[in-house]
Length: 212
Figure (cartoon, helix red, strand yellow):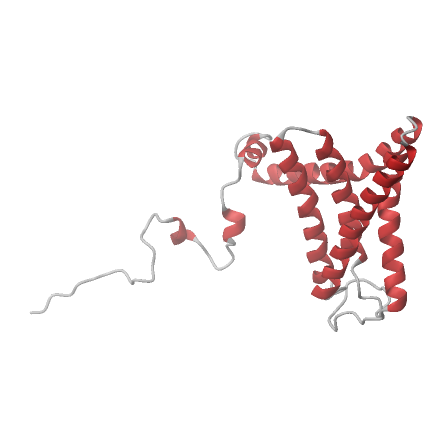
């Protein structure tokens, strides 16, 4: 009489293991535990309210990102009123220099957009460079540079730069997702955005030296 040994397949995780309850639709990067800010947001609407947590999180995200855009415009107006012309010029012309460089490039270089289903109706021969990517770097990178030059708290500086970097990254991936740009177009947008901010810093410093 033979004795059978029942065993669990090697590929199956033990009962109670977090992976045991996963399905094909689970995304590990989204299922990880959040940081301190995420934990506070999780309990903000009360316990066991995941839908309201998500809704409030989306609203906070919109408000935070829109606030950054509004800060640039309000800051420029305040700088003009205070007759701080170099600061006003930096806030106003960082995006203008980027936009002018983008337009000039598209007039010279005619690159067709990816041959996929595109979610926007824009000229098909103006793929290079990505103007949205360049503009997001010029705006948010410029704001981060100004804010972190005044703030001495290291954690605050890191948080500001993380946001300033993540927004252009999100914009870049969204433009490719919508079928509007190749990766090379995104790289070109990064170069223009960084160059626009760098040149505005140089011009602003030079004008300050001229004034002195």
